[in-house]
Image (cartoon, rainbow, N blue to C red):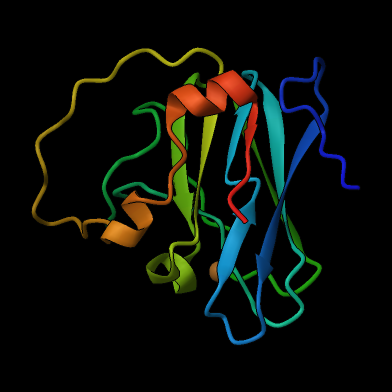
Length: 157
Ligand SMILES: [Cu+2]
C-alpha cells in the first residue's frame, strides 16, 4: 500500500513530486501530476527514474519562449537536467495556477500543474505568435484546476 502526503498540510513542509519513466522514455510522468498547496510552501521534484534525465520547467516567455502559464507576477524557473536521484525545489508565494513540463519529454505528455491557494480567474490573453505553443499531448495532460482543489492531489500514472 502506498501513502502520499496530504498536499494541503499546514506549515512549511515540503511537498514532494517524483519524476518517473520507463527505460525507453516512451512513458514518463510527474507523480502527482496535480497538487494543491498553500502560498509559501515549497515543492520539491526528485528524479526517481533510473533510466532518464528530466527537467521541471515553468511555462513562461522568459524560459525558452513558451506561453505564460504561471501567475503574471510569479518567478519562472527551470531546473535544467536532473540526473537520477537529483532534486530541485521551488517556493511558490503567488496564488494561482502554475503549469510546468519536462523539456525532453513535453511531447510525451510529461507535464504537471500546481494550484497555489485560491486562484483568481484570469482572462485569456492574446496568443503571441513569437512563442512556441504547447502540443496537444501537453495540453491534455494538465489535471483540471477544480479537480486539484477538490482532491488536493491528482495522480496520472
Ligand atoms: Cu522528462
